[in-house]
Structure formats: structure tokens, C-alpha cells
Amino acid sequence: MQPTLHIIGTGPGDPELLTIKAMNVLGRCQAVVAPKGSLDGHSTALAIISQIVPVGGKEVYELFFPMKKITAGQEPCAEVREAWIDAAKKILALLDEGKDVAFPTLGDPAIYSTGYYLYETLLGLRPEVKVLFYSGISAMSSCSAETAIPICLGNEMLAVIPATFSDERIRRTLQDFDTIVLMKVHRVLERILILLKEADLLEKAVFIERAGMEGERIIRDLSELPENPHYFSTMIIRRNGQGIFC
Image 1 (cartoon, rainbow, N blue to C red):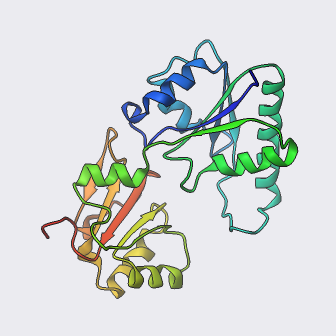
Image 2 (image 1 turned 90 degrees about the vertical axis):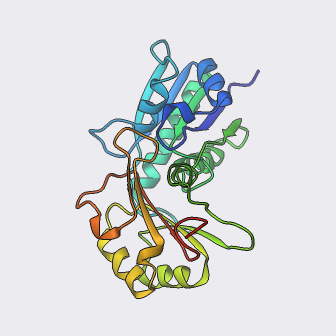
């Protein structure tokens, strides 16, 4: 059989939320290539899967993927592009050795994931490469479960966006949608609070940090937000209230 790259959603952080299919595929792969966000750090995705799937007998590589802004339809900066190419070449080398390779990525690969950038880069180098995707539980799904807040109901419209978008784009989104999920809020909380106040939505928002993980925090009164929130921080804003019965 043709050696295959398996791009696997690890879920939001709790290793017990890894799907059975993901666990089975990870168990079969001879090599794991995991992304990390800093040169001297470690891969969070690898740490998640290592808690539930033994990786000691596998070839394991942690590769640096710079966490820089990427605009759809535009070429990324040289540093980001070079990192994608280096990762793709490493994976192709492992595939050429006859190894199946797992690439774990946080949450679900379909939502703001490194996995699809890697996939596109691989196809550019070798169009015939075999790649399979495995969905994972998204951060917003985990946050919804932990807070008992629905993401959308009935005829409500949903928007999922990074909190790093421009003020104007966030303003339009807050105005046009019934539920807004803001991802990557940890660095821009002060700015988001100003925009929520402008839109009269402060009391409709909930902040969730490390959903489903040790150290989880759910804050419904945004005046009590932490000064240095964790990277795994999400905000759910519902025009129709924080919960069904609000």
C-alpha cells in the first residue's frame, strides 16, 4: 500500500476527546511529525496524543511552524513559507522510506489549522502524494459543552473568527451574526472588551480558558478576566443570551 500522511485533529486539549479512529491511526503510524509554535518549545499536539497513544517506539519529530498572520489568497512571509516547505520535505522523506506519517494538529484540521497549509505545500512538491484527514473536536464545541451554551439554535447565524481581525471586521460580525465565537483572544482581550461594550454585548459574552483541561476557567463576568490569559482561550457571544434560558 502507498505510504500515507495522516493529518489528525487532536481535539481541544483533553486527550480523552481524541476520536477512536484517530487513536487507531496514530497507533499504526511509524512516524509522527508534530508542529510547534516556538523554536525552543514543544508541540502541544504531540503532548496531547502522547497521553493516550504510546509514541516511544515511533520516529518523532517536532517541527517549527512560525505563528504569524496569514491572509487567505496571499503568499505568506518567507519565514512561514520556508517552514512549510521544510516540513513537507521531511514528511516526503519519511514516506519515501515506506513509513506512514501522522501529523497531529490542535482541534479540527478544518478550522484555522496548520494541516491544510502543509497539505497544499505537499501537493505543490509532489501532486501524487497520498494524504488523509481525520476530524477532531473543535475548541468551540468543547467550550459549548463545558458552559452548557449552545453555539446556534433555530434560525440563528454563526460566525467563527480570530479575535485578531481588524476592529471594523469584528464590529460588522458582532452586528450581523447571532452567535460569534472569537478564537485567539489571549493577546487582544482589552481591545475586544472595548468592541463588546460598543455593541452592548458585554453581558452576552462568556470567556473560556483551557476548556475541558486541568486549570479550566469559565468567566461570565468579563470584569473579572485574567491579566495574562492562556493561549487556549475562547469567547462565545450570543445575542440571545449566554444560555438557552437567559
